[in-house]
Length: 122
Image (cartoon, rainbow, N blue to C red; front, side):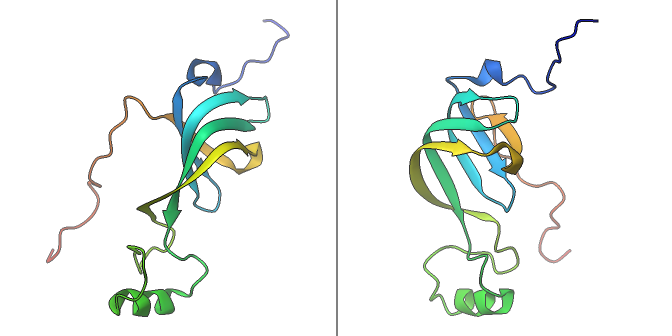
């Protein structure tokens, strides 16, 4: 056995390719992976953040705003951390490794319907 430690996550194959990164606290960012280190700090270029509902509002206030249609984003009153179709361009960013929960390629992945969601009336 060699003295060199091997990482479980081999990010080298994702360099200069599109990746989706999920961070603690519910943030979700996509961009082109430009670099990384052993602590999982990531450098993303042309990064775009997917905005969420208002996580700082109490759920009952958010539910009331959504019912009154006075909230400008398409928020989910039951899950204020759910991402929306709204985006924000960030450009070149560094994601701190301690906040990274998931890294996945953007190419070759498709979003599917949640098979565990019960249809209305069931």
